[in-house]
Image (cartoon, rainbow, N blue to C red; front, side, top):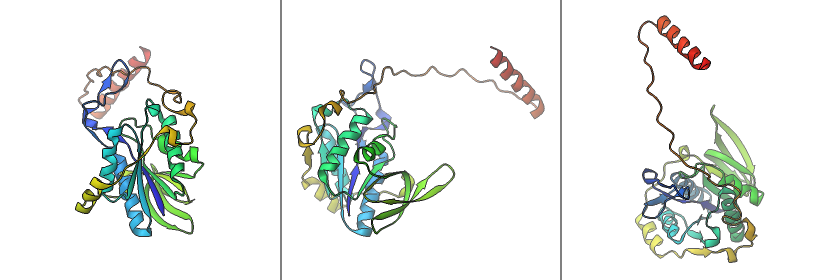
Length: 261
C-alpha cells in the first residue's frame, strides 16, 4: 500500500505574528514546527504500514527550509519525502494550495491513501485536505479517529462527530483527515534520526508538474485577507448576588434594557 501524508511547516503557535502592512504571517526569525495535527497523520500512516505493509511518503509545499519538517517525519518512520517548492507557488490560498499538492501527488502515481491532519494551526480552515480530494476526484472522509480495517480495496473507519462517531466504509484510493484522538505519536528513533540525515528529499517545481499556471500562487488565489485586527477587550461584566429568584429578576431586567438599547 502506498500512503502519502501531506504535512505543513507552521510557526510555533506561541510566536505567531502578523505583518500589519501585508496582513500575512511573519515567518522570518520565528521558530517553525510540524503542524500539530499532521504529527498524528504521520503516526497513523506509519501504523498502517506496520499493519498492512507498504510505504509512507511525506509531502509538503513551502520554502526550501520546509525540508526540516520532512526530515522530522522520516525520524518517526516515513520512508521518503517530497518538497514542492517554487516562487510560483508563493501567496497561495487554500484553493491554490490544494490544486498544487494534488498535481504533485498525481505525479507520484498509484497512491492508495492520502492522509492529512484535520487542519493547520496557522490558518485553521480545514480546507486543503478536502480540496486535494476534490482536485483528484477521490472519496474523502474527514475527522477520522480510528481506522478499523483495510481489505479488498476498501477501508472501514470511524469518523468523529459531535454526538459520537460514524462508521464509514470507503473505496480506495481515498483521502482522509485525522484528529488527534486517533493515536499517540511515537518519539523519533535513533535509526530514524540516522536515516533522516541521509535521506534524499525529492524536489518538485512548477515546471515538473502538469499544472495550469493561472491556478498557482497569488494568481490562482481568489481569496485574500483584507484586514487583521485585535478585537477590543470586553467590558467588565456585572455580578449578581443573592437568592436565585432575585438574581434571575435582575438578569432579565438587564437583558431587556440591553435589547431596548
